[in-house]
Image (cartoon, rainbow, N blue to C red):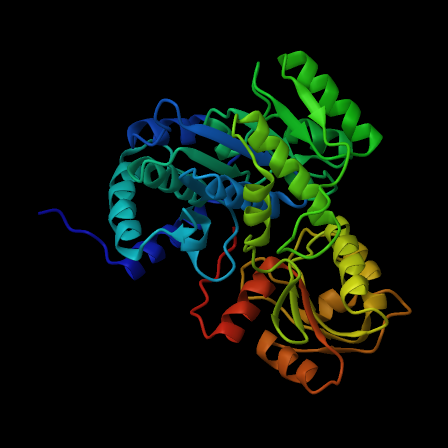
Length: 407
């Protein structure tokens, strides 16, 4: 009988494939999807979500509402916060450890026979797609990893495409202007299949309209937020994400009732995005200026007149100065630390991006040290910046085993 890796061994192998880096392109994932019989079965609907901010929240809302309508859903998102298996869920449940290990064993054998070794993200996607097929999912919701045009998720044919707000991020891969980034995001459009977008800046809107026109993709923009429903996720921006989610499911042909929408939205779980994990402790993965603006607005709505003990970190390649310019006014004191990832920056380097009028700050070698110092303050604690930081914090605060990742 062939040897099957145990879960820890399988995860160690999977994470070791991060040494192959990020390869944007569709040939590799298409081949792996084909070889592992991981394409969706006939009749399974695929909703594909790209954008800069709000992708994960929108995916979680689509999944929750569709399940409230009785659909069996597979949800693929990234990155994970604490445990890799968060990325792959069926009806809200993470893929079990034994199934994950067995399938990674099979994928390892496949990958070793391929001319070009698949990347970590490609393997994770194909693992998810095979699991969704085995579990007979009726609907699959895919969050792009980065960009869209050459993202591995685009190898899966989509029935409905969603674009959340587009801003500046991943410029080294996607381009140094909003127009270039918008072209990459619009690369998920499929000829003849509907696409729905959040309201966008005028330059982005024009790009999306041109790309949709060229592909003969019917494109519409959400005009209003979804009001009058109970929202599990805080912040006005989530009402816009909810409007996108409802539009996506409408175009997928679901018969939505106000009861199913209300039930789904009231039960969305999406950790690490303005998550009040304990009274007075908020986690938020605000890793670019746009998401920092959303965080600042939501903080002022939730804690009017209150300053935060801000624990902050970021990784290389981010607009750290832009993020700190927005978050610094929220803070009474700032605690800087590195995160547990190869892309980490030392606290001293992050400090160089603070605005000249920032609150007093401290440098720490670890998150544990920074959190302990912030806990000594009277103000509520805001742990923000990198999602890697949020994952490390969430593991500590929930007594979970943190699986550090660079992707």
